[in-house]
Image 1 (cartoon, helix red, strand yellow):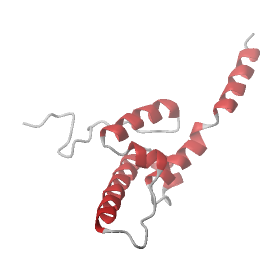
Image 2 (cartoon, rainbow, N blue to C red):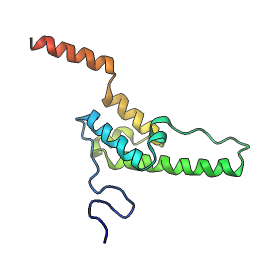
Image 3 (spheres, rainbow, N blue to C red):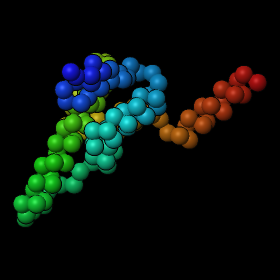
Length: 124
């Protein structure tokens, strides 16, 4: 009998859904899911183009990478609120969607530090 917390394809039944808050927490959870699905490197690093004169082994490897990319993009699509999905709807690869979300919601670590410092001053 199948475990109720996972589906047949081994995806957790209760994936985290990003709703425009707690981006860092969602991002951390997603990285674990990508790693479990063997797609983290594709989502964060992208994939190389296939050479015109690629041999069969290279074509096979490229197909496997494309499948991992599709899995990563699928997971991102499933794990964002419909309003957030609209911001990445044009992205055709997982890295593009991931980077777009990071650019919009992740912010720069330096900028976060500045904001935190300003908040501390405000409440001192």
